[in-house]
Length: 184
Image (cartoon, rainbow, N blue to C red):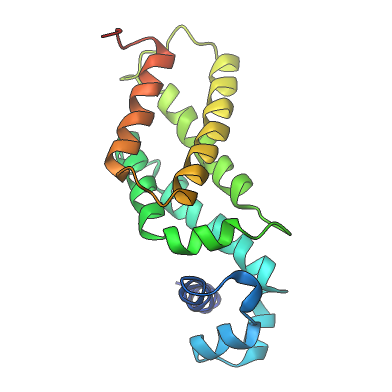
């Protein structure tokens, strides 16, 4: 792994650790770098400010937990992993979602979720063959935005429903959309 990426990950880990206990506004760059045991100037070599750092975390972690797995994991496994990840990281994300000044959480997550849903709609085991490519793009966009909202609400409510149940709910909703599940 590139040394720059390793350093960014150390800084991000330190920041996330601090945000488990403190709100974003109370954490300084000095606090982050003290926790990382790195010089303050190193921060500015990699990030302009805390907002750029949090955006980088959103982008990197949503990509690592979704897009990077698309070619290696089955999509229903990725769905479950998404909820397991956010359940594990809920303290950080609960504090992060309270940052309104510059919050790219929704956009970063949406881009990767849309890609996941597009893959699902193209999966031979999800019979949406009656969907045109245009409809698949529209449905994956709709589902991506909806899933971002569901994840945000779930995190802010304290992840009371298990990750497995959340993944199952999304899975069954998807089957309903494709018309492959009969009503009980």
